[in-house]
Image 1 (spheres, rainbow, N blue to C red):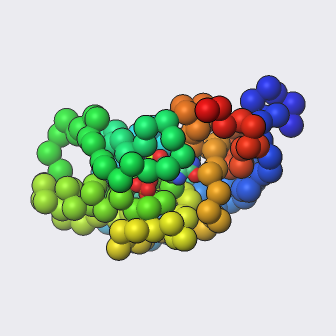
Image 2 (cartoon, rainbow, N blue to C red):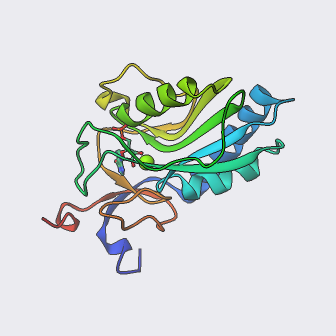
Image 3 (tube, rainbow, N blue to C red):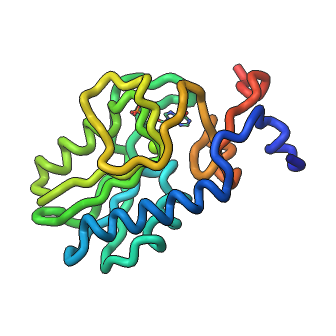
Length: 183
Ligand code: IMP
Ligand code: MG
């Protein structure tokens, strides 16, 4: 750990090697599930962007890629419980097989809202892929179809996940030192 940013990391939860290995497995599992289809990969910004880039390359299906931005966090480490669409899709999704790509499934508020919205818009199917799953904090009845790693109830950063919009470019999943949480 050398950079100024990395000095804020208390411990590594999932290493770069573990991430790479698991994302390859997830890509192959998705390929098998959706073989013969041309899904639309729908990334939930901003946290998905690193995972999504690796996942689509690990899954050699003919597909297209879109992004939506949803917000339920207001710079805090606890969800506000309300979800807003801050950036919507520009193309119709009727009849499409969707793969939602999310960084972490926490309370489930975001994905429960999104899944319902997409099905209401006429998606043929919705497959949820999340890199991390924090089942201990779930308040909504929603599960991922594929999850990379189950993590304990700790706030994690890196590989796309942020604290106050920072630390997304740390290449592994880590836990911040308490003093890194500014008030
Ligand atoms: P949910 O709606 O509570 O499931 O929260 C999902 C969103 O909250 C994720 O997409 C993340 O953006 C954010 N989030 C939840 N837990 C963490 C965490 O430990 N680190 C960083 N972001 C998190
Ligand atoms: Mg997110």
